Length: 61
Image (tube, rainbow, N blue to C red; front, top):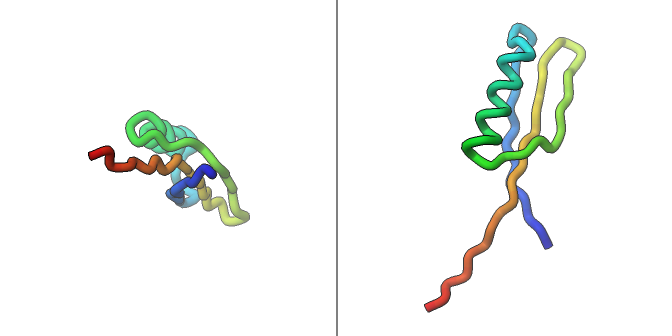
């Protein structure tokens, strides 16, 4: 069974789409996060859920 950890990014209504996209791109490139869900609320607040797989490492010795 695959387990994921999640990170939520929240941007206010004054943040441009380009700036939000750049923040998601940096998390994806350097932290191996992937886009899970994106919502724009009525007031203009943008909330983006990122996820990445949890890799369990077993001790060998």
